[in-house]
Length: 365
Image 1 (cartoon, rainbow, N blue to C red):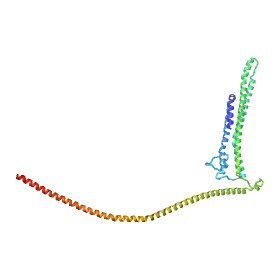
Image 2 (image 1 turned 135 degrees about the vertical axis):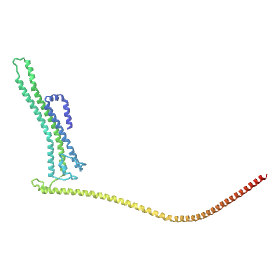
Image 3 (image 1 turned 90 degrees about the horizontal axis):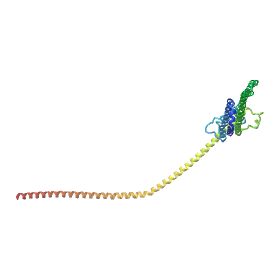
Image 4 (image 1 turned 30 degrees about the horizontal axis):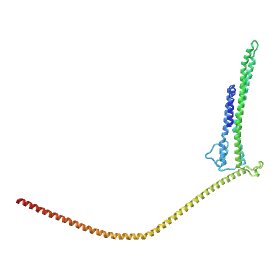
């Protein structure tokens, strides 16, 4: 679609001078036609782009992934509500799959109604402009014929008046042909875009149909024929039973996953217990080694205690000898102090005697 749009833009650029003159023949009609064409192109692009979320959701469901957050869909809204609370790939009956596909086809057709209407509107506007221009042409031509007078006038003046009067019919013909040109050309371009959008929607419908065909479980051969179809309550009961079996299968799969996780946890616990047991054995060996070392150290400790006791006895004798020496030293110090005092007393007495003797000699002399 983008390539075709670029091609149309290139052709328009090449033919711009002629298209400009045709557009100015009747700007109102032609501007309306071009506006409708642009709206139609935008609508077709929007229809194709709107299929991207639908295709992404369908691809996620095919891979078994539900998606991080819910997406609001338009075409597959019934399927999203149907599979909202289901995990994995649910099963559908043939009637349910057929009803889903019919609803999807109706939505796709309704989605293209606007584009088809715009194509018809372009054709209608082109024809309307054509008829409007022809109406102006006919009325202007009637006025020209009614006002044509050749008596009593020169031939040049007659032709000059005729040329002036023919401008009205020619303008009407320009309006008619330009409206037809823009209307039919716009309808052709918009029709191609609608065709491409239809191809995209058909491919999307086939993708959904193939996916639903994988999820559909067929009824029993006895009820496969439409004339001998099963009663409604039996079919509902079978569908309910199928849903219950699917729920049971999911519960069993979750229980298997839980059992596998529990087995892994038990293996980890066994590994931890074996490691703890190895540590306990190592500590026991270390304790036994310490006990043996303690037994080996006891004789050494006894001999050390005996040597300490003998050393204590020798220290007591040494202390007694030191005390005796201290007593002797104290006696010697006291005796020396007494002798010093006596010596000082004797010196004082001798000094007194000498002083007296000297004083007596001085008196006698």
